Image: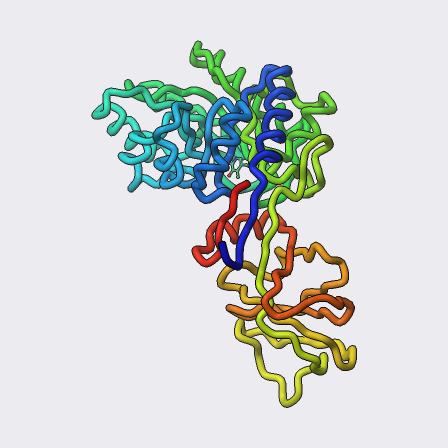
Length: 354
Ligand SMILES: *Cc1c(COP(=O)(O)O)cnc(C)c1O
């Protein structure tokens, strides 16, 4: 197939999905399988469906369009662009929303499509990314009042997202804010709100230890299924981690000093690099670079290999302690979340799904 290449074990991902879906269903929680890390790759998305997710969720409508032949509900999880409302209504069944202007637009196209479009109104309980700030009750009330007037929009639920921008972790306290808002809205308007979409893979810990309020009945799980990790990027017990590996080909191996010779200006990215003098070292260059993936997202599978740095197209390694490495060999790396995402999105990185 050639290099650089990311190899993804879809069996492990399917197994992770089965385990999490069972655990969630046992607690009355539906699972939205978040696919944004797969860049729309149909083969991996199939593993999530076979693993039993209740719906597919992605931040890009372009990816949901690719899933149009899968007969399963689809949810857009980035606040919709007003300019995409028409496409969103056509290719998805629900979206996480926070702006009434956009909801009006969704309603307009839902009417044209003769469709009831579902929305989950996002409430920000402290992470400071999307949603109406939870303390702004007036804004929440006004928004819901306007939503309820719309013929082609169903207020399917309310939701929140944590651990993404501010790094605020989900707790009983901040999730209870959501539960309170749900009850408040139900009383105020005499309505029934079916879903509280209470978070992502970072919620698994408090779900397992029983601290997550029982009213939370939907989780949007991405990285737990794809990489077996959750809160603080720690492995989720019982799930497979290292579901993907990256292979990069060695194009040069030379013995050279560890500190550059000459007056040091700035590197290709405008930074003044620092070097530690370790004497002469054996250095290898792999044909992959920051155009594809940043070096801090890579973890060499062989512990004797150290990453020294990268430029746009070259990854430089210290291979002093590695004996059997030759030009043309492929070096293997595990990936962080950022690495998985970047590799899937680089058109130069080949994708092998096993
Ligand atoms: C990415 C994302 C998720 C999934 O998060 P994971 O940590 O990968 O489980 C859930 N909800 C929203 C809104 C997201 O953007």
